[in-house]
Each structure stands twice: as structure tokens, then as C-alpha cells.
Amino acid sequence: MAEHDNAYKFLFSHARMVEDLLKGFVREEWVDHLDFSTLEKVNGSYVSDDLRGREDDVIWRVRWGRDWLYVYLLLEFQSSVDHWMAVRIMTYVGLLYQDLVRTGQVSSGDRLPPVLPVVLYNGESTWTAATDINLLVQDVPGGLGHYRPHLRYLLLAERDFRDADLQSLNNLVAALFRLENSREPEQLLQVVTSLLQWLGAPGQDSLRRAFTVWFSRVLFPARFEATDQPVLEELDEVQTMLAERVKEWNRQSMERGLQKGLQKGLQKGLQQGLQQGQRRSARRILVRLMEKKFGPIPDELAERIDQADEEQLVLWSERVLTAETPGEVFGN
Image (cartoon, rainbow, N blue to C red; front, side, top):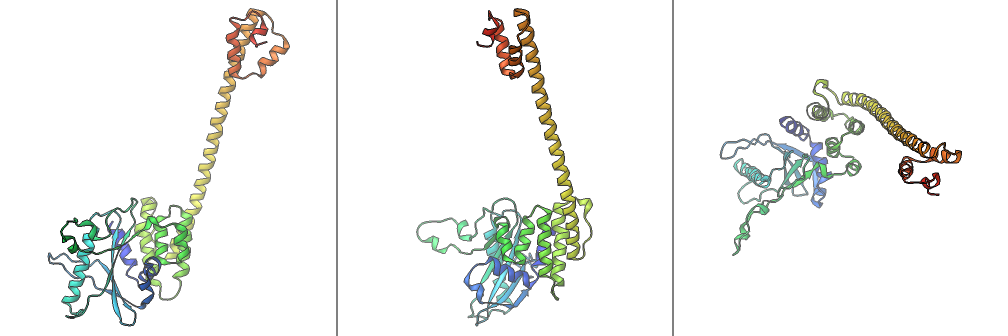
């Protein structure tokens, strides 16, 4: 999990990823008033009272409207459901406010800046934890409930997004979610090709490198054999590798399909052979019984025996035991 978290934090240390996150996944009116040219990464090395640092947090700020109010983004990365996530978020936001006051970034008499906490969840199971601390505090009568804290966080569960919806966004974070959700090499190759187009402009070298690191340390180890992990330095190398994987996957798929077809044909042939063998055995038994009791079988009856199925042959054989004439055997 450390590699996964570090790779995500490397990606979201780029302003364009944060911009695409807000534009693509925070569908609220206030986002339209943000000045994304002012996005600035904030040092998250504030320390709580028990001396546990939060230096790994990914925190950004951006000017909001004409008044240059601040919006701080506090991103938490999760791959398993944390029942107490709302408590953690409340603690982190409190530490952030405490640091702003301590360092003089917020003066006495000022209001604290708004904070948008975001939880990115890439786990397989459904997220069931409360998204507001209010839901974790016991409700009591007599007015005490008025003092329950309220603090929500934005949950982005990657598995909840349909691929078609993500593809329509033309968004780097949507591409990241598609890569997390994809299971076929063809789809991975399609997304990487789009990434190369989007990140081909000058000045995108660092972000291309961040995606390359994420492929090398997170996605490929999870999808492919550990003994077949090449060292990748550029995103176009990822594209080349995936193209080879697609060829290999298609070849293996064809082989599996051919093998499955041959196996199915063999099974069908064996089944038919058994059925035909059982029918021949039933025919021989009926003919022997008929000849022993009634003598040579007339041609028209022999023809009926040849055309009958196994079930009919068994029925006629049972009738031979009590029949007085060949006609009674055949129901005449």
C-alpha cells in the first residue's frame, strides 16, 4: 500500500491533476469561480500535539473569486473501508487550521478558509463508512444534539464510475480511474494513448514521469507477473509494452478459444458416439429377442427397428416378453 499511496501523492503533486479533479468530480457551482492559475501546493508538515507529523498530506490552495479567499484541498488516499474516516478527517482539518493560526496565515478576527476534504477510494468493496462526523456521534434528547459536530468529506469511489462516463470527461483524473478499473490490455492501451496526446505539450514532462512511475510501481505489479516487470522511464515505453501485451493477450485468447472449441467438439463427438453405441446395443437386443420368439423379422419391421431411437427400442424389447405376435410388439 505504501507504493500505491506514494505514487498517488506523486501524481497529485501536479496542479493539473488537482484542477482536473475539481473540474471533473466536484460538480458544484463554487468550482466555476476558482482561479486555477493560482493553484499552489501547501507544506503539510504541521505536527499534532502527540508529535505525529502529517508531512505526507497533499494540500493545495487556490484563489476563490474576487476576494482571493482560499480553498484548501486535503486529499486522503484509501484502498480499504475505514469506519472512522470522518474522525480522521475532522482531526486533519483541525490540525490544518491550527497550523494556519500558529504560523500567522490567519490573523485574529479573520475567518478560517474553507476546506474541501477528499477521500479517493480504490477498494473492491462498497464504501460503507459515514461521510460526515455527525453520523458517528450518538444522538441524545434534550438539546444536546445541537452540539454535535458537522464536517463532511467528498468520497470518490473509483469503482462507482462507469467507463463510458469517465471516457467522456477527457480528464486526467478520469483517465487514472479508468486505468484503476480496467482489466483488459486493450483498454489500458487506449487510455495510455490518450494520456500521451494530452501530456505531449512542453512542460508536461514531470506529469508524464509521474504516470510512468505509477504504471511501474502500482499497476503493472498488480496486473502482470512479478518476473516480467521491465524498467520503464517514459510513458511511450508504457504504450509500447502494452501494445506487446495486447498482441500476446490476443494470441493467448485465440489459443484458449481454439482449445475450448476442440474440447467442446470432442465432448460432443464422444456423447454422440455413446448415444449411438447405446442405440446399437438396444437394437441388437431387440432383434435377438424377436428372432428367438418369432423367427426371422420381416423387412418392414426391420426397417422400423433401424429408424427407432433408444427409448423406443427398449420399450419394444419389454413388449416381446408378453406379446403373442410381432404386431403386438410394435403396437399394431
